Image 1 (cartoon, helix red, strand yellow):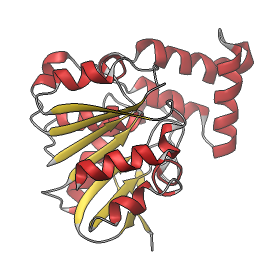
Image 2 (cartoon, rainbow, N blue to C red):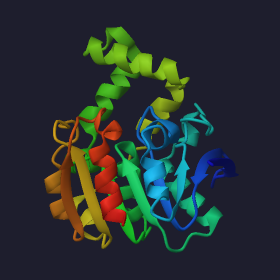
Image 3 (cartoon, rainbow, N blue to C red):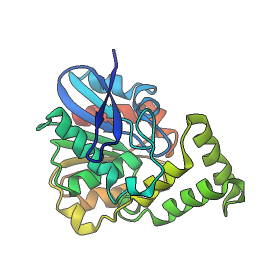
Image 4 (cartoon, one colour):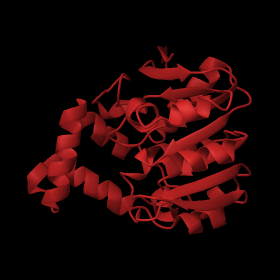
Length: 248
């Protein structure tokens, strides 16, 4: 049975997290415009990881799910999502754990490791080299869509992103805060991460650069390609299998 709790992060904002199973702590961080339920629990990934004899700890990122969604930009300093993960790990007293992220969650996991986090293993899903290190064009597309909707430079993306936010009750101001908090990651930053890391991405996922190049920069990195694109890979059993095989 999944249990949900909240804690007070470094700046007093309430962050929700969901816990399933018992055993080795495995922190799983979801993607942008999603939440832990959508990325991890609904597709069965959390259950599969818990089935390894692990305790899944899946936060809702700031602005998402059941977590606080402030709109004041003062609540969105650089690296705030990584700071929240560090606060969660400290709150739970975790000293030996693994870290899994998808899309924005993978970017957040990298930032947490750049800031000194040292999980035993890490999984970076749905991300390539440019998505981790730059995110400029993608972030600009999202910002345009959030601000302008159908009047965005890419009207189709504008409509889709606005519809996603409405369906999940997401605040445009909070989502702009997420984008404003992005911090740049350099190749040197990645080369200093010693953690054994699986970079896993869908074969048709070309949104965020090359997973193979990302894995090559990481000293302990290796890339695995699964079925699907950026949106569909999360629901494909091949992604679950790759994560489970690596963590096992």
